[in-house]
Length: 249
Image 1 (cartoon, rainbow, N blue to C red):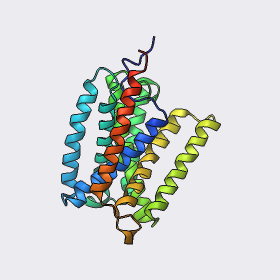
Image 2: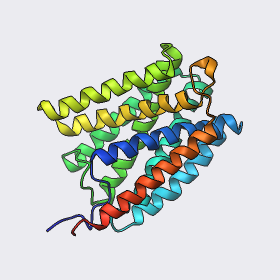
Image 3: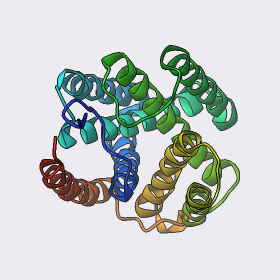
């Protein structure tokens, strides 16, 4: 008997990773639009994105089964909130990218340790229990915040251009893919490594789209880049809904 009807999260496929990257790009450009373009600052940005995250997470947790729209709205919320959290820690609190990343990494490890202690595994599909789903979303939020900090570290601290930063993280993701297919390394470990590094890839690519030409970007603007990302993710959510309806329960 299939557990698809009770499962609450997306299956890990190529479509999942494509949507994750687009969602992270949207999270970066939308987060910057709120905090920088609108001039609201990181504290107000966190308040706005945290409220959005709380609303869509409540909808997701109360759903009886996996609904692509709900799931991806929470992913988008975590990427946007993650942008604000990382920037607030690095810039407003003055922790810097290294210390900010260490704090987020430590919190992520503690979350995964707690997850494993309770369920004796870190499998991300399927997820049926609400308590396990809460661990999943906590890990997702921390992963996206950590990935944002790493992406900013590549461009601001190391001095890589936004395009080169995106290429570096793309290369890491490519290595993880090779290890997935051609090694015996634990697949759950590889998932979380890939999940973390898709965030800085989306972040640096988002910066590449929006930052001024003088800074190595395309100067498309945060609003325009966000609109394009929203259109793309909406199309793929529709595709996900159609695919989900064709799954036999």
